[in-house]
Length: 331
Image (cartoon, rainbow, N blue to C red; front, side, top):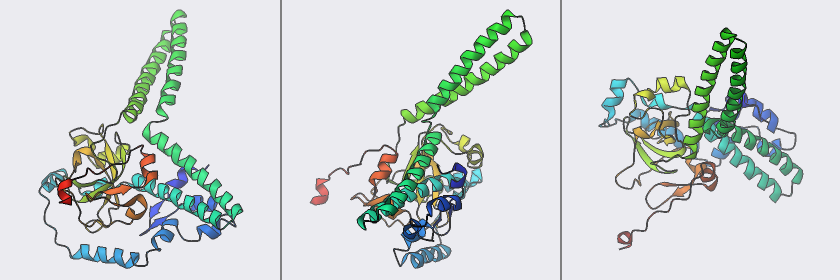
């Protein structure tokens, strides 16, 4: 299995760079002929010859842009925050791993089409490794493993209570006091992991995958590409983003969003609380630029929102959204 620490080295390079350890595991003598020497996303992005010049022009336009102030932006200034405070490397990493899975699956099929079955088998084995690691990371993040963790803590509590009773019977009150404190600590931890697992099981979201939104404070346009029922970032990230100052704090849905590159080309992916997002009153059919759009979505629907690929919907267990038919538009 791919080591978890290797995944943290995935970074943005104007495109995406795969971790060196992961690449070493994937680059077998035959399979490397299909994977290539360049990072996986570079191979994907270079399929569009105009990508580099297009991305450069976006940045140049951004430097020349004189933006109107978003009416809610005063709140951000008072808090001393800017859009970069919600930048999330872990969310970006999550998307890159997802893309890596899609890329490997495509290469497996390509090898099969060429009847290169040995290469296809090697790639399939690597794909399995990445999928297993992805599942493990998702379970740790989303609380799927919290149930078993809570059960383990429950068993430990039962054993400690038996030891506590023995300590009391033997009148070893010093040991009894230590055991009582340990039991209290385990009970609190068990309650926390159980609550996290329950939150993921009964999650309700105001927004959906592919929906175009606007940030209440910073005003930028964004598209939903992932979601968690509670904040799954680190405590240091939450402190920097001042999450606890939000009306619902960290115990509310948080969304992985792609940020329009025309206004914020360096933000890439943000992790935003539901409290900080607004759905447009009217369909947003304006142009939206981002390098990840082409592999996360099939395209845009009639309302201007993006249609997530099947694999993305399956990842978050979301059903396909059907745009309501409006007979007046036909007229």
